[in-house]
Image (cartoon, rainbow, N blue to C red; front, side, top):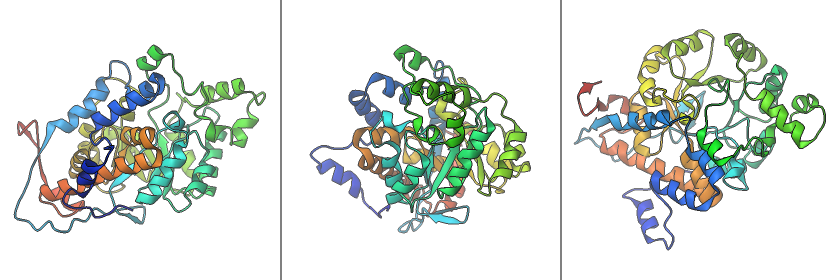
Length: 387
């Protein structure tokens, strides 16, 4: 559970520790680079192509500055949010990140246990190292959503959704920006493919429809089966409508960047939107997610939740996203680095640090709640373009 630490209690604890845990994203990344192999590290760290999208994500946050207000009573800060009828103590979520065994043997099991302890919703990837049923059993009381990669064989997608629903997952997050694999130069440089090494086995080898589609139970058949199904260039709005007919769970679309796609999502009865460029790992040269957020918030106009994903490395990043209209913020690379450094405890440390920075920053900006952040004044490019 998130604690009401004040006056830098966590920072002081870290200062007094014999082995301080990295606080900043840069320090986390450096520590992980020294701990795990180049292949897994490069896979997690890198972006597609020349990494312009990766840089755009960070540049987007750095373009916005806060004009704080003072002499407000900020003794009590309310960081709660509501999503799909449930209240959570923070506006943070665990973004879906696949193949967590690359970072730590406990993989997704450690992350979902951390999510349960912190009361933060956890989104599990289709390409997880552990099956969704194992994740559900590891933390039965945690809020869990299932991120779906569409399959060339649509029955596999429907099977995974049915399994998620049966296991107690509370929403489906359909990723729409992976119709094919992005141009990943770092992985080519390192000659590293986690899919081919079996890191994504969890959900596939436990899916009866997927396994029945293979010619045999060999590892080679599994790899070929995943590669044939995980990318889906034919994915379209009719598939989305058909998915809605296959589940009673709320459906969110992850990967929306254009306001017209956001409008189409609302028109097609989608229950939520995750503004994301896949952490810069798919199409290079894409707009930063934060830069895409305001136009999508305007189009959606409160009809469904809008969640910001990609490039959120600090609590202050989360504050800016919330101030620009996001209803919640998803965290990806930082928690994976925490997992690599110290398993479940590392994940909890990273997320707690992010939350504590967010809470302090809300108060210092002169706000008293997540909703109140909508009233915080932001300027773009230090006031050159007021928003």
